[in-house]
Length: 108
View (cartoon, rainbow, N blue to C red):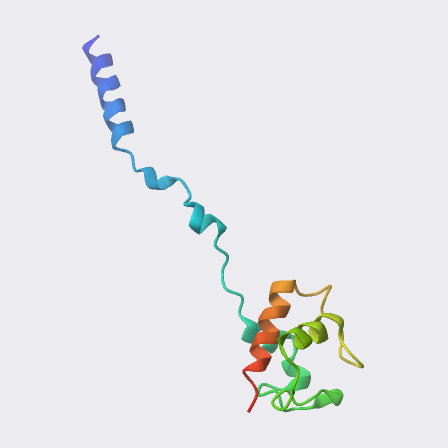
């Protein structure tokens, strides 16, 4: 009988001392990793625009002199134009926004 009491006591102590950090934190559970616009640009845009945005292959525009604002760039990447393909079925809206924001950093 004393073995059962000792077992129950140890079980209660273990349970009481268990860390409460095992539950996911609401802040970390909803936090999304940052989207790397530069990486997306390298994978999808660099072939025509070049690493610095100036290549101009296949008729692509020089991004360093582009006057498009962020919303216009998002629309361009989303819907495409001319020979530039639309990325709306390839990239998420967050990825499109990230690559559009990155393209602004290429301006002179």
